[in-house]
Image (cartoon, rainbow, N blue to C red; front, side):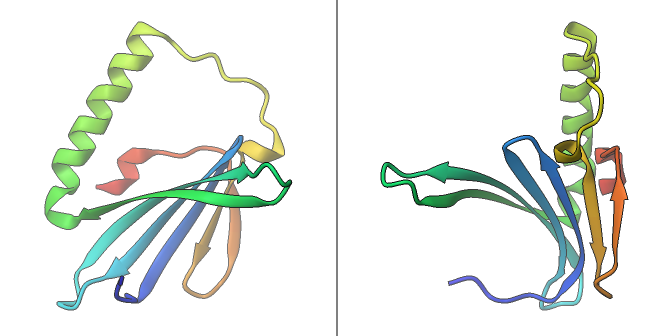
Length: 115
């Protein structure tokens, strides 16, 4: 059973059929860590649906190495298979919610912000 940790900051990224949740939480020792959750809607044979979720816990001591690895992989992909952005749709926009419940929309996600 997962302990309920205090949520400090959340960012929701809707990307096509998937939604990503970036949640900053606090540890028992009052440090921050990040959970990254991918959620995808799956339809059952009877027409009902469920959400399939995958979660990663990323602790502060791993931020630099994680960021280096992610940047390296992104650089490789962009170098080998350059991406041509499609016109933005409502499904590709992102929403940020801080602990006061205010929402703001963004059109760009930068993983370098994880530093």
